[in-house]
Image (cartoon, rainbow, N blue to C red; front, side, top):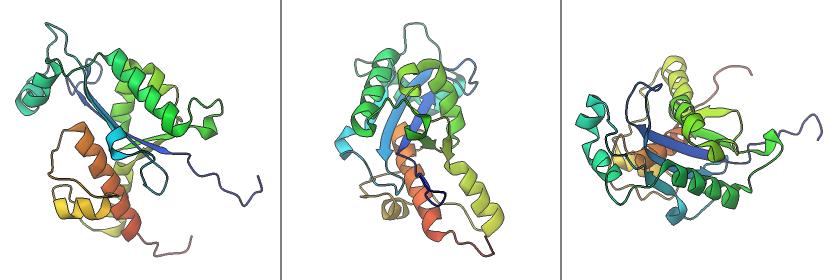
Length: 209
């Protein structure tokens, strides 16, 4: 590779999770979702291949008061036959990466990058509970929240409005978002992709590089 060649990321693995508690050291997974795109934010798989899994809550396993109040529907799904074990979720997520990213890659530079909003929180739980999925990923993280901070502090504009359905569908490749649903892992992924696309389209450099 010459000095002028830049190796782009092989893929972005958009990941979001919902947890049993906001205290991450004590939290367990409730929901996980995955969409894979290239670095231009185009899906690398058909929409029906995206993953959105509820994780089974074992009998007697508690959730925090905040989760009980705000995610009651999700908690009910995690206690239904719809839910899968965390081991099954890990297997299916790893299989998705193997199919659409050609993982596992021996070279770290060839591995896809985990992406999302405040994705370090999701990474923390992923490292604890999803080992097969985790080992297929690059050590780097693409955090849209970091770009949002620069957008507000440097450009001085309001951040992307994730409650605006028309704005979401304008920037999410392929559209198809019917309603805003904060704290749903799959919706949050789609909103993050749309948000990054929005900043990429509108962010300009006002000074010398």
